[in-house]
Amino acid sequence: MIVGGHVMIQSRDDAADKAFFRDVLGIPSVDAGNGFLIFALPPSEFAVHEADANGAHEFFLMCEDMDDFVAAMRAAGTEFTAPVNRGWGTITAITLPGGGKLSVYQAHHARPHKTAKAAPKREAKNKVAKPAKRKAKAKKNQTKSRRR
Image (cartoon, rainbow, N blue to C red; front, side):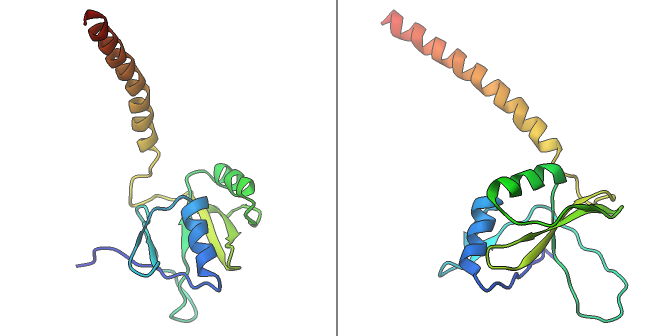
């Protein structure tokens, strides 16, 4: 029935914000036509909170490690608020190039999806194995060249 979600971020400088998501945050995208980029999101989740009125929605990006995220934003020259631990997560807000604010948090609560932390271990293992395979292949090619 439901196959995904689609989030719209309104911006006074959409070109600058698109470049930020693409170049600074490294989020992959596709061009849906005429430069209208649609960005991929990692596994996402949503929650329903009690409120005094209906119709208000918030969008947060999530990070695995707030310290690493803050260091990356500092290195990129991106403004952000001081991270605050709220119990359910540690939260900051970044200022997008177009002037909008976007909250980012590191979850301290249970997640319905596996986190990406397992993936780097597999990637690191593969990265270690590849150079060894390259060396073996290069050595094999050198041996073949000497035989000729």
